[in-house]
Image 1: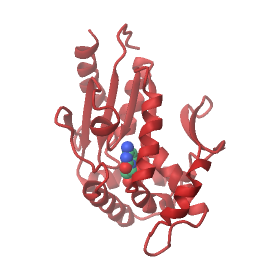
Image 2 (image 1 turned 30 degrees about the horizontal axis):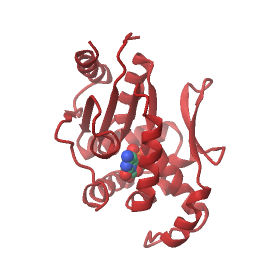
Image 3 (image 1 turned 135 degrees about the horizontal axis):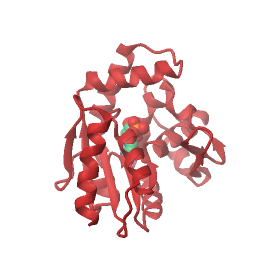
Image 4 (image 1 turned 120 degrees about the vertical axis):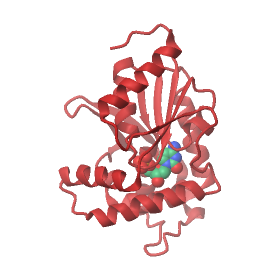
Length: 234
Ligand code: DC
């Protein structure tokens, strides 16, 4: 545990499966900070839209009009599960942590993440959660849009093949039937949509520090970020 008197905000952005959440969770644990996975929020909205048949199967077209009408019915929150030692995502009081990681959600989430009114609602909620600082949030627009004044901003990247391989191993461990090729395609598609969307595209904030972890161990990444945190809290 690193003890600090000064609380800061840590924004970790970057490409999908670049290891943001692993690093974010670990540094939040060491600092005794709140950890928020903002991607889980977009995934929960996607699950809601899929369950309500608001995303067309082949075209991924979202029925935005209906979604906007139903948005008031979407309530997302997080609870810590001490048995599983992980934070879990709740959609309208239902634990959806496992379901939001499935391929069907992964394949549709970028189409939900493009929608302006969805992003506005998520950003407002994220700012509310971070208003007292002492928070680590990971996502795509945390350092650029959600917390532009964050004391520490990290932008993470790794080669698409490395990221797909990590995701493949993760899903295999969970017994999810999926091929490496399918994951690589999903990773590349999401990169493209994340980078080219009009609303809050994935870009590196001018004051964020880049980390390419293609050839780094988890411990090396953690030591690196601890150094940066210490510079900011002392
Ligand atoms: O981090 P993740 O792969 O679980 O994120 C799921 C999707 O949500 C991803 O395609 C991009 C989107 N997202 C976003 O647009 N903004 C964020 N702050 C976090 C995620």
